Length: 134
Image (cartoon, rainbow, N blue to C red; front, top):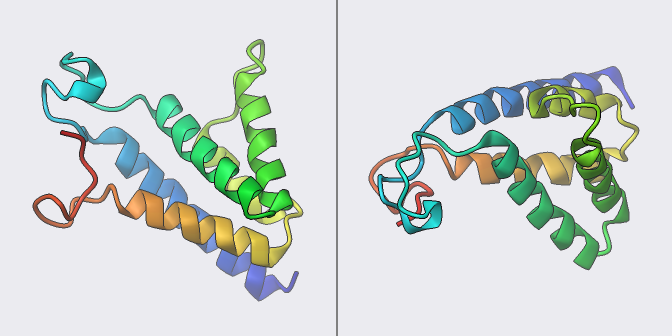
């Protein structure tokens, strides 16, 4: 991979890590949201959010025959589920992606999809311009 491509991927993953921090630190659900069982929860659980997003993406990639991406997300799930050793934080995992040995086109697809997903959480105005459960 050319240094320019690596820098671009590193910049994109750094942006994703910052976006993840913003998304996982803000409350997304109004008090009493049915998805939270009507409990007052100030923010989503970042570990559960990560698992939900990556699980959905893994299934989609497997259905599309994108085996390298499905394998990448399988490996992340295995790392998270190891139990005895805490998985590295999602932001650190994202930062590692440019050196993970994934074909650049496939990695570009994953980064594009994840960016679009996380950007959908960004408050860009009143609903429905942002993802929020009701």
